[in-house]
Amino acid sequence: MIHISYNRDVYQEDMIKHVKLLDNVVELGCHIGTSTKILSRLCQDGTVYAFDNSPESVEAMHNLGIEYRNIEFKQLDVRDKKSLYEFSKRCDDIDVLCIDLGGGYHPDTVFKVFFLWSSILQPRVTLIRNRGLMDFVNTSISSENIQSNKGYLTSSAKEIIPSELKKRTK
Image (cartoon, rainbow, N blue to C red; front, side):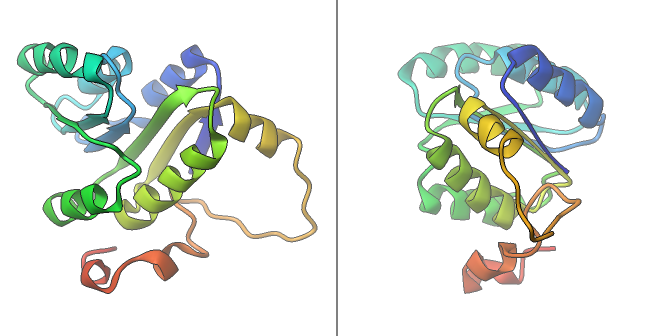
């Protein structure tokens, strides 16, 4: 399933509801690790792969990685396809994808990042925090019924997977 919220408390409650002890989680937009701590405690026997491009995340996430041994942080731009492809070749068993790229801003960027990362990683659940996407979903009406019960868009995900990664997808 794909869960979209704006309120940080709701986003973190969704983590508590959907992240399991053995899950491997990708967190895009970890910043200084507030939600990363929650994820790390929830999936104690899994791994949290946390990514952020902000300079202030580096020291904070380094310290968090010392305290919580199941966190792997890397400073990178999650919009960069090359970074995604390199990661997916190394880790292809992701259960949960969490995306919080600023909460209220740039729904177009958030959707693009979601679409690329979720199509390649094909998680069981995706949690997104973004006001623009929440507003769009809650005010949209369609006469067509295209749905997915996975953490990615099953109707179109396979179309964007590069040939070198197709054999790795589920």
